[in-house]
Length: 437
Ligand SMILES: NC(=O)c1ccc[n+]([C@@H]2O[C@H](COP(=O)([O-])OP(=O)(O)OC[C@H]3O[C@@H](n4cnc5c(N)ncnc54)[C@H](O)[C@@H]3O)[C@@H](O)[C@H]2O)c1
Image 1 (spheres, rainbow, N blue to C red):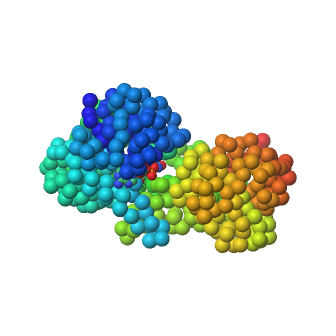
Image 2: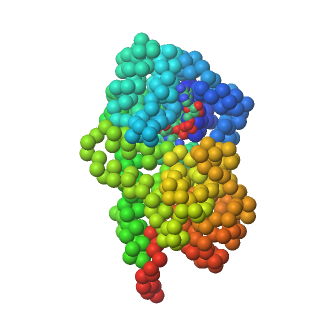
Image 3: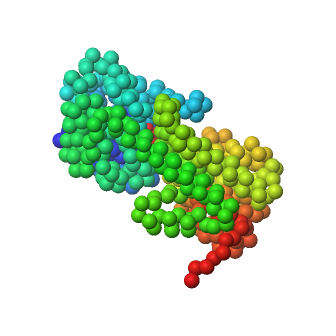
Protein backbone atom coordinates (compact mmCIF):
# COMPACT_ATOMS: atom_id res chain seq x y z
CA UNK A 1 0.00 0.00 0.00
CA UNK A 2 1.41 3.36 -1.12
CA UNK A 3 0.33 6.69 0.34
CA UNK A 4 -0.42 8.93 -2.62
CA UNK A 5 -1.15 12.64 -2.81
CA UNK A 6 -2.80 13.94 -6.00
CA UNK A 7 -2.57 17.72 -6.32
CA UNK A 8 -5.30 19.22 -8.55
CA UNK A 9 -8.63 17.38 -8.46
CA UNK A 10 -10.07 18.43 -11.81
CA UNK A 11 -11.14 16.44 -14.85
CA UNK A 12 -7.81 14.58 -14.88
CA UNK A 13 -6.59 14.60 -11.28
CA UNK A 14 -9.81 13.33 -9.74
CA UNK A 15 -10.10 10.20 -11.91
CA UNK A 16 -6.40 9.46 -11.24
CA UNK A 17 -6.96 9.82 -7.48
CA UNK A 18 -10.13 7.72 -7.61
CA UNK A 19 -8.45 4.96 -9.63
CA UNK A 20 -5.49 4.61 -7.25
CA UNK A 21 -7.88 4.60 -4.24
CA UNK A 22 -10.03 1.95 -5.90
CA UNK A 23 -6.86 -0.19 -6.22
CA UNK A 24 -6.38 -0.17 -2.42
CA UNK A 25 -3.97 2.74 -2.01
CA UNK A 26 -4.54 5.51 0.51
CA UNK A 27 -5.03 8.71 -1.47
CA UNK A 28 -5.28 12.28 -0.28
CA UNK A 29 -6.33 14.76 -2.95
CA UNK A 30 -5.38 18.42 -2.61
CA UNK A 31 -7.20 21.24 -4.36
CA UNK A 32 -7.62 24.97 -3.72
CA UNK A 33 -11.34 24.75 -4.52
CA UNK A 34 -13.24 24.26 -1.24
CA UNK A 35 -16.42 23.10 -3.01
CA UNK A 36 -14.49 20.39 -4.86
CA UNK A 37 -12.95 19.22 -1.59
CA UNK A 38 -16.30 19.22 0.25
CA UNK A 39 -18.08 17.26 -2.48
CA UNK A 40 -15.36 14.59 -2.61
CA UNK A 41 -15.36 14.23 1.18
CA UNK A 42 -19.13 13.73 0.95
CA UNK A 43 -18.46 10.84 -1.46
CA UNK A 44 -19.61 12.78 -4.53
CA UNK A 45 -17.93 13.66 -7.80
CA UNK A 46 -17.63 17.33 -8.75
CA UNK A 47 -16.99 16.35 -12.38
CA UNK A 48 -19.72 14.85 -14.53
CA UNK A 49 -19.74 12.48 -17.45
CA UNK A 50 -16.72 10.40 -16.51
CA UNK A 51 -17.67 6.72 -16.49
CA UNK A 52 -16.65 4.82 -13.34
CA UNK A 53 -15.41 7.80 -11.35
CA UNK A 54 -18.56 8.49 -9.31
CA UNK A 55 -18.72 4.90 -8.06
CA UNK A 56 -14.99 4.82 -7.25
CA UNK A 57 -15.28 8.00 -5.19
CA UNK A 58 -18.35 6.83 -3.28
CA UNK A 59 -16.75 3.47 -2.44
CA UNK A 60 -13.27 4.78 -1.66
CA UNK A 61 -14.44 7.64 0.55
CA UNK A 62 -16.71 5.25 2.47
CA UNK A 63 -13.74 2.87 2.92
CA UNK A 64 -11.56 5.82 4.10
CA UNK A 65 -9.06 5.28 1.30
CA UNK A 66 -9.81 8.64 -0.34
CA UNK A 67 -10.21 12.07 1.15
CA UNK A 68 -9.61 15.62 -0.03
CA UNK A 69 -8.11 18.72 1.54
CA UNK A 70 -7.18 22.29 0.68
CA UNK A 71 -3.95 21.88 2.66
CA UNK A 72 -1.53 20.77 -0.06
CA UNK A 73 1.55 20.99 2.18
CA UNK A 74 0.03 18.68 4.81
CA UNK A 75 -1.13 16.22 2.13
CA UNK A 76 2.35 16.23 0.58
CA UNK A 77 3.95 15.65 3.99
CA UNK A 78 1.94 12.44 4.45
CA UNK A 79 2.68 10.99 0.98
CA UNK A 80 5.20 8.56 -0.49
CA UNK A 81 4.24 9.64 -4.01
CA UNK A 82 2.91 13.03 -5.14
CA UNK A 83 1.18 13.34 -8.53
CA UNK A 84 0.64 16.86 -9.86
CA UNK A 85 -2.27 17.62 -12.21
CA UNK A 86 -2.68 21.36 -11.80
CA UNK A 87 -3.06 22.88 -15.26
CA UNK A 88 -0.45 24.99 -16.94
CA UNK A 89 -2.60 27.43 -18.88
CA UNK A 90 -1.61 29.53 -21.88
CA UNK A 91 -2.62 33.06 -22.74
CA UNK A 92 -3.96 33.47 -26.31
CA UNK A 93 -3.60 37.24 -25.88
CA UNK A 94 0.13 36.77 -25.24
CA UNK A 95 1.15 34.53 -28.18
CA UNK A 96 0.00 31.44 -26.23
CA UNK A 97 2.81 31.83 -23.70
CA UNK A 98 2.35 29.65 -20.59
CA UNK A 99 0.91 31.24 -17.46
CA UNK A 100 2.65 29.41 -14.66
CA UNK A 101 0.86 30.90 -11.62
CA UNK A 102 -1.38 27.99 -10.53
CA UNK A 103 1.19 25.26 -11.12
CA UNK A 104 4.03 27.12 -9.46
CA UNK A 105 1.99 27.91 -6.36
CA UNK A 106 1.02 24.20 -6.13
CA UNK A 107 4.70 23.20 -6.35
CA UNK A 108 5.68 25.72 -3.68
CA UNK A 109 3.00 24.25 -1.39
CA UNK A 110 4.32 20.75 -2.11
CA UNK A 111 7.81 22.00 -1.27
CA UNK A 112 6.62 23.24 2.12
CA UNK A 113 5.43 19.75 3.03
CA UNK A 114 7.53 17.20 1.15
CA UNK A 115 9.66 14.72 3.12
CA UNK A 116 12.96 13.17 1.97
CA UNK A 117 12.49 10.02 -0.12
CA UNK A 118 9.27 11.16 -1.84
CA UNK A 119 8.63 10.52 -5.52
CA UNK A 120 7.14 13.60 -7.28
CA UNK A 121 5.48 12.98 -10.65
CA UNK A 122 4.41 15.88 -12.84
CA UNK A 123 1.61 14.77 -15.16
CA UNK A 124 0.60 18.27 -16.31
CA UNK A 125 1.83 18.84 -19.87
CA UNK A 126 4.95 21.02 -19.78
CA UNK A 127 7.31 22.72 -22.24
CA UNK A 128 10.48 20.70 -22.78
CA UNK A 129 12.95 21.26 -19.94
CA UNK A 130 10.50 22.68 -17.40
CA UNK A 131 10.42 19.65 -15.06
CA UNK A 132 14.15 19.88 -14.36
CA UNK A 133 14.84 23.57 -14.84
CA UNK A 134 11.71 25.26 -13.54
CA UNK A 135 9.55 22.94 -11.41
CA UNK A 136 12.22 21.00 -9.50
CA UNK A 137 13.94 24.19 -8.31
CA UNK A 138 10.63 25.52 -6.89
CA UNK A 139 10.30 22.42 -4.71
CA UNK A 140 13.99 22.65 -3.77
CA UNK A 141 13.68 26.27 -2.73
CA UNK A 142 10.58 25.73 -0.59
CA UNK A 143 11.84 22.51 1.01
CA UNK A 144 15.59 22.92 1.29
CA UNK A 145 15.86 19.42 -0.25
CA UNK A 146 17.82 18.56 -3.43
CA UNK A 147 16.12 16.88 -6.37
CA UNK A 148 17.76 13.62 -7.32
CA UNK A 149 19.50 13.48 -3.96
CA UNK A 150 16.59 13.89 -1.49
CA UNK A 151 13.53 13.37 -3.68
CA UNK A 152 12.80 11.74 -7.02
CA UNK A 153 11.37 13.88 -9.81
CA UNK A 154 9.65 12.56 -12.93
CA UNK A 155 7.57 13.77 -15.83
CA UNK A 156 4.84 11.39 -17.02
CA UNK A 157 2.32 12.86 -19.45
CA UNK A 158 -1.41 12.38 -19.01
CA UNK A 159 -2.50 11.18 -22.45
CA UNK A 160 -6.14 10.40 -21.76
CA UNK A 161 -9.32 11.94 -23.12
CA UNK A 162 -12.21 13.37 -21.11
CA UNK A 163 -15.16 11.04 -20.95
CA UNK A 164 -12.96 7.93 -21.11
CA UNK A 165 -10.23 8.72 -18.60
CA UNK A 166 -10.38 5.49 -16.57
CA UNK A 167 -10.46 3.32 -19.67
CA UNK A 168 -7.50 5.19 -21.20
CA UNK A 169 -5.51 5.16 -17.93
CA UNK A 170 -5.75 1.39 -17.83
CA UNK A 171 -4.98 0.77 -21.50
CA UNK A 172 -2.53 3.42 -22.73
CA UNK A 173 1.15 2.75 -21.94
CA UNK A 174 2.42 5.21 -19.31
CA UNK A 175 5.42 7.17 -20.60
CA UNK A 176 7.84 7.93 -17.78
CA UNK A 177 11.03 10.02 -17.82
CA UNK A 178 12.90 11.11 -14.71
CA UNK A 179 15.57 13.73 -14.02
CA UNK A 180 17.87 10.76 -13.31
CA UNK A 181 17.83 6.96 -13.60
CA UNK A 182 16.74 6.43 -9.99
CA UNK A 183 13.72 8.72 -10.45
CA UNK A 184 12.68 6.91 -13.63
CA UNK A 185 13.06 3.52 -11.92
CA UNK A 186 10.96 4.63 -8.94
CA UNK A 187 8.14 5.84 -11.19
CA UNK A 188 8.22 2.72 -13.40
CA UNK A 189 7.85 0.54 -10.31
CA UNK A 190 5.09 2.79 -8.92
CA UNK A 191 2.86 2.62 -12.02
CA UNK A 192 3.53 -1.08 -12.69
CA UNK A 193 2.72 -2.12 -9.13
CA UNK A 194 0.07 0.52 -8.45
CA UNK A 195 -2.06 0.06 -11.56
CA UNK A 196 -0.63 -3.06 -13.22
CA UNK A 197 -0.33 -1.15 -16.50
CA UNK A 198 2.26 -1.14 -19.26
CA UNK A 199 4.96 1.45 -18.59
CA UNK A 200 7.16 2.98 -21.27
CA UNK A 201 10.33 4.41 -19.70
CA UNK A 202 12.30 6.99 -21.72
CA UNK A 203 15.79 8.45 -21.36
CA UNK A 204 14.93 11.66 -19.52
CA UNK A 205 12.23 13.99 -18.25
CA UNK A 206 12.85 16.08 -21.37
CA UNK A 207 12.15 13.08 -23.65
CA UNK A 208 8.87 12.42 -21.85
CA UNK A 209 7.88 16.12 -22.03
CA UNK A 210 8.71 16.20 -25.74
CA UNK A 211 6.75 12.99 -26.42
CA UNK A 212 3.49 14.53 -25.22
CA UNK A 213 4.01 17.65 -27.33
CA UNK A 214 4.95 15.47 -30.30
CA UNK A 215 1.65 13.56 -29.95
CA UNK A 216 -0.29 16.83 -30.02
CA UNK A 217 1.66 18.28 -32.95
CA UNK A 218 1.19 15.03 -34.88
CA UNK A 219 -2.57 15.16 -34.45
CA UNK A 220 -2.78 18.88 -35.21
CA UNK A 221 -0.71 18.52 -38.38
CA UNK A 222 -2.65 15.42 -39.43
CA UNK A 223 -5.97 17.23 -38.98
CA UNK A 224 -4.59 20.24 -40.87
CA UNK A 225 -3.68 17.89 -43.71
CA UNK A 226 -7.21 16.45 -43.64
CA UNK A 227 -8.61 19.99 -43.70
CA UNK A 228 -6.42 20.98 -46.64
CA UNK A 229 -7.43 17.84 -48.52
CA UNK A 230 -11.06 18.54 -47.63
CA UNK A 231 -10.91 21.98 -49.20
CA UNK A 232 -9.35 20.48 -52.33
CA UNK A 233 -12.15 17.90 -52.35
CA UNK A 234 -14.74 20.66 -52.19
CA UNK A 235 -13.24 22.17 -55.34
CA UNK A 236 -13.05 18.77 -57.01
CA UNK A 237 -16.57 17.70 -56.14
CA UNK A 238 -15.65 14.45 -54.40
CA UNK A 239 -16.60 13.50 -50.85
CA UNK A 240 -13.56 13.72 -48.53
CA UNK A 241 -14.99 11.11 -46.13
CA UNK A 242 -15.02 8.54 -48.89
CA UNK A 243 -11.55 9.62 -50.05
CA UNK A 244 -10.14 9.16 -46.52
CA UNK A 245 -11.83 5.78 -46.03
CA UNK A 246 -10.31 4.60 -49.29
CA UNK A 247 -6.86 6.07 -48.58
CA UNK A 248 -6.78 4.65 -45.05
CA UNK A 249 -7.50 1.16 -46.36
CA UNK A 250 -3.74 1.18 -47.07
CA UNK A 251 -2.22 0.19 -43.71
CA UNK A 252 0.35 3.02 -43.59
CA UNK A 253 -2.21 5.77 -44.19
CA UNK A 254 -3.80 7.26 -41.05
CA UNK A 255 -5.45 10.46 -42.27
CA UNK A 256 -7.60 12.01 -39.54
CA UNK A 257 -11.00 13.62 -40.11
CA UNK A 258 -11.43 17.20 -41.29
CA UNK A 259 -13.73 19.58 -39.47
CA UNK A 260 -14.55 23.10 -38.36
CA UNK A 261 -11.35 23.30 -36.34
CA UNK A 262 -9.53 21.73 -33.42
CA UNK A 263 -10.47 22.47 -29.81
CA UNK A 264 -9.88 21.38 -26.24
CA UNK A 265 -7.05 21.66 -23.71
CA UNK A 266 -4.40 19.81 -25.65
CA UNK A 267 -4.14 19.79 -29.43
CA UNK A 268 -4.61 23.51 -30.15
CA UNK A 269 -2.45 24.50 -27.16
CA UNK A 270 0.63 22.34 -26.69
CA UNK A 271 2.07 22.87 -30.19
CA UNK A 272 2.78 26.40 -28.92
CA UNK A 273 5.13 24.94 -26.29
CA UNK A 274 7.28 23.96 -29.26
CA UNK A 275 6.51 26.88 -31.55
CA UNK A 276 7.37 29.41 -28.84
CA UNK A 277 10.72 27.89 -27.94
CA UNK A 278 12.21 26.16 -30.98
CA UNK A 279 13.17 27.56 -34.37
CA UNK A 280 12.31 24.62 -36.68
CA UNK A 281 8.53 24.60 -36.39
CA UNK A 282 7.21 25.67 -39.80
CA UNK A 283 4.85 22.73 -40.13
CA UNK A 284 3.50 23.04 -36.59
CA UNK A 285 2.82 26.75 -37.12
CA UNK A 286 1.16 26.17 -40.49
CA UNK A 287 -1.08 23.46 -38.99
CA UNK A 288 -2.27 25.88 -36.31
CA UNK A 289 -3.08 28.48 -38.98
CA UNK A 290 -4.93 25.97 -41.19
CA UNK A 291 -6.99 24.52 -38.34
CA UNK A 292 -7.93 27.88 -36.82
CA UNK A 293 -8.59 29.14 -40.36
CA UNK A 294 -11.44 26.65 -40.72
CA UNK A 295 -13.63 29.20 -38.94
CA UNK A 296 -13.19 31.57 -41.90
CA UNK A 297 -13.88 28.69 -44.25
CA UNK A 298 -17.20 28.11 -42.45
CA UNK A 299 -18.10 31.75 -42.99
CA UNK A 300 -17.17 31.45 -46.69
CA UNK A 301 -19.43 28.39 -47.11
CA UNK A 302 -22.35 30.20 -45.47
CA UNK A 303 -21.70 33.24 -47.63
CA UNK A 304 -21.93 31.01 -50.71
CA UNK A 305 -25.27 29.70 -49.49
CA UNK A 306 -26.82 32.90 -48.16
CA UNK A 307 -25.25 35.51 -50.43
CA UNK A 308 -24.03 37.38 -47.37
CA UNK A 309 -23.86 36.60 -43.67
CA UNK A 310 -24.23 40.24 -42.65
CA UNK A 311 -27.58 40.66 -40.92
CA UNK A 312 -28.22 36.90 -40.90
CA UNK A 313 -28.79 34.75 -37.81
CA UNK A 314 -26.77 31.57 -37.37
CA UNK A 315 -27.28 28.99 -34.63
CA UNK A 316 -24.26 26.88 -33.69
CA UNK A 317 -25.02 23.45 -32.22
CA UNK A 318 -22.50 22.72 -29.47
CA UNK A 319 -20.37 25.07 -27.42
CA UNK A 320 -18.29 22.01 -26.51
CA UNK A 321 -15.09 21.32 -28.37
CA UNK A 322 -16.24 17.75 -28.97
CA UNK A 323 -19.47 15.75 -28.80
CA UNK A 324 -20.85 14.72 -25.40
CA UNK A 325 -18.13 16.49 -23.40
CA UNK A 326 -18.92 19.55 -21.32
CA UNK A 327 -15.69 21.36 -22.13
CA UNK A 328 -15.45 24.58 -24.11
CA UNK A 329 -11.73 25.30 -23.78
CA UNK A 330 -10.50 26.55 -27.15
CA UNK A 331 -13.67 25.15 -28.74
CA UNK A 332 -13.95 25.81 -32.47
CA UNK A 333 -17.34 27.34 -31.68
CA UNK A 334 -15.54 30.33 -30.19
CA UNK A 335 -13.58 30.96 -33.40
CA UNK A 336 -16.56 30.33 -35.69
CA UNK A 337 -18.80 32.60 -33.61
CA UNK A 338 -16.23 35.42 -33.63
CA UNK A 339 -15.69 35.07 -37.40
CA UNK A 340 -19.45 35.19 -38.04
CA UNK A 341 -19.92 38.17 -35.72
CA UNK A 342 -17.03 40.00 -37.42
CA UNK A 343 -18.86 39.44 -40.72
CA UNK A 344 -22.02 40.99 -39.28
CA UNK A 345 -24.06 37.91 -38.30
CA UNK A 346 -25.99 37.33 -35.09
CA UNK A 347 -24.84 34.10 -33.47
CA UNK A 348 -26.89 31.87 -31.17
CA UNK A 349 -25.49 28.90 -29.26
CA UNK A 350 -27.59 25.80 -28.60
CA UNK A 351 -25.93 23.39 -26.19
CA UNK A 352 -27.95 21.45 -23.59
CA UNK A 353 -24.75 20.60 -21.67
CA UNK A 354 -24.31 24.27 -20.68
CA UNK A 355 -26.60 26.69 -18.87
CA UNK A 356 -27.36 30.06 -20.46
CA UNK A 357 -25.20 31.68 -17.77
CA UNK A 358 -22.26 29.41 -18.61
CA UNK A 359 -22.64 30.25 -22.30
CA UNK A 360 -22.84 33.96 -21.45
CA UNK A 361 -19.42 33.68 -19.76
CA UNK A 362 -18.03 33.29 -23.28
CA UNK A 363 -19.89 36.48 -24.30
CA UNK A 364 -22.21 34.38 -26.45
CA UNK A 365 -26.00 34.30 -26.68
CA UNK A 366 -27.66 31.03 -25.60
CA UNK A 367 -30.83 29.67 -27.12
CA UNK A 368 -32.97 26.54 -26.94
CA UNK A 369 -32.64 23.79 -25.83
CA UNK A 370 -35.81 23.03 -27.80
CA UNK A 371 -35.28 24.08 -31.45
CA UNK A 372 -38.84 25.38 -31.47
CA UNK A 373 -37.78 27.97 -28.88
CA UNK A 374 -34.98 29.20 -31.15
CA UNK A 375 -35.72 32.51 -32.89
CA UNK A 376 -35.84 32.28 -36.70
CA UNK A 377 -32.38 31.51 -38.10
CA UNK A 378 -30.91 31.53 -41.58
CA UNK A 379 -28.33 28.81 -41.04
CA UNK A 380 -27.37 26.03 -38.65
CA UNK A 381 -23.75 25.08 -37.98
CA UNK A 382 -23.03 21.73 -36.33
CA UNK A 383 -19.84 21.89 -34.25
CA UNK A 384 -20.34 19.15 -31.61
CA UNK A 385 -22.92 16.49 -32.39
CA UNK A 386 -24.07 15.66 -28.85
CA UNK A 387 -26.31 12.63 -28.45
CA UNK A 388 -29.11 15.02 -27.54
CA UNK A 389 -29.00 16.34 -31.12
CA UNK A 390 -29.49 12.96 -32.79
CA UNK A 391 -33.28 13.19 -32.68
CA UNK A 392 -33.43 16.78 -33.96
CA UNK A 393 -35.98 17.53 -36.62
CA UNK A 394 -34.40 20.18 -38.85
CA UNK A 395 -37.89 21.43 -39.71
CA UNK A 396 -38.18 22.75 -36.14
CA UNK A 397 -35.68 25.52 -36.86
CA UNK A 398 -37.90 28.26 -38.24
CA UNK A 399 -36.47 30.03 -41.27
CA UNK A 400 -33.36 27.85 -41.63
CA UNK A 401 -32.13 27.40 -45.21
CA UNK A 402 -28.86 25.51 -44.78
CA UNK A 403 -27.08 23.17 -42.40
CA UNK A 404 -23.28 23.27 -42.32
CA UNK A 405 -22.19 19.90 -40.95
CA UNK A 406 -18.89 20.84 -39.32
CA UNK A 407 -18.15 17.28 -38.19
CA UNK A 408 -19.43 15.33 -41.21
CA UNK A 409 -21.70 13.25 -39.01
CA UNK A 410 -25.21 13.99 -40.31
CA UNK A 411 -27.31 12.05 -42.74
CA UNK A 412 -27.53 14.48 -45.69
CA UNK A 413 -30.80 12.87 -46.82
CA UNK A 414 -32.54 13.80 -43.55
CA UNK A 415 -31.42 17.41 -43.92
CA UNK A 416 -32.49 17.77 -47.53
CA UNK A 417 -35.77 15.91 -46.85
CA UNK A 418 -36.53 18.66 -44.34
CA UNK A 419 -36.15 21.18 -47.17
CA UNK A 420 -32.74 22.55 -46.12
CA UNK A 421 -29.51 22.65 -48.08
CA UNK A 422 -26.77 20.37 -46.76
CA UNK A 423 -23.13 21.47 -46.70
CA UNK A 424 -20.21 19.67 -45.10
CA UNK A 425 -16.48 20.16 -44.72
CA UNK A 426 -14.88 18.47 -47.71
CA UNK A 427 -17.98 17.92 -49.76
CA UNK A 428 -18.53 20.59 -52.38
CA UNK A 429 -21.64 21.53 -54.29
CA UNK A 430 -20.52 20.35 -57.71
CA UNK A 431 -20.89 16.61 -58.06
CA UNK A 432 -18.26 14.29 -59.43
CA UNK A 433 -19.36 11.21 -61.37
CA UNK A 434 -20.57 8.29 -59.22
CA UNK A 435 -19.82 4.89 -60.70
CA UNK A 436 -20.04 2.48 -57.78
CA UNK A 437 -21.44 -0.83 -59.08
N1 LIG B 1 -8.66 17.90 -19.82
C1 LIG B 1 -8.08 17.08 -20.68
O1 LIG B 1 -8.73 16.58 -21.61
C2 LIG B 1 -6.62 16.66 -20.52
C3 LIG B 1 -6.16 15.60 -21.28
C4 LIG B 1 -4.84 15.18 -21.14
C5 LIG B 1 -4.02 15.84 -20.24
N2 LIG B 1 -4.49 16.88 -19.50
C6 LIG B 1 -3.56 17.51 -18.53
O2 LIG B 1 -4.15 17.60 -17.27
C7 LIG B 1 -3.94 18.90 -16.74
C8 LIG B 1 -5.09 19.19 -15.82
O3 LIG B 1 -6.25 19.33 -16.62
P1 LIG B 1 -7.72 19.21 -16.02
O4 LIG B 1 -8.60 19.05 -17.19
O5 LIG B 1 -7.77 18.23 -14.91
O6 LIG B 1 -7.90 20.68 -15.40
P2 LIG B 1 -9.16 21.18 -14.57
O7 LIG B 1 -9.24 22.64 -14.83
O8 LIG B 1 -10.35 20.32 -14.80
O9 LIG B 1 -8.72 20.96 -13.05
C9 LIG B 1 -7.64 21.57 -12.45
C10 LIG B 1 -7.82 21.52 -10.93
O10 LIG B 1 -6.64 22.08 -10.34
C11 LIG B 1 -7.05 22.86 -9.23
N3 LIG B 1 -6.01 23.81 -8.89
C12 LIG B 1 -5.70 24.99 -9.49
N4 LIG B 1 -4.67 25.57 -8.87
C13 LIG B 1 -4.32 24.75 -7.85
C14 LIG B 1 -3.31 24.80 -6.86
N5 LIG B 1 -2.46 25.80 -6.77
N6 LIG B 1 -3.23 23.79 -5.96
C15 LIG B 1 -4.09 22.73 -6.02
N7 LIG B 1 -5.07 22.63 -6.95
C16 LIG B 1 -5.18 23.62 -7.85
C17 LIG B 1 -8.34 23.50 -9.70
O11 LIG B 1 -9.11 23.97 -8.59
C18 LIG B 1 -9.00 22.34 -10.43
O12 LIG B 1 -9.81 21.55 -9.59
C19 LIG B 1 -3.85 19.79 -17.96
O13 LIG B 1 -3.07 20.94 -17.74
C20 LIG B 1 -3.20 18.90 -18.97
O14 LIG B 1 -1.79 19.04 -18.87
C21 LIG B 1 -5.78 17.30 -19.60
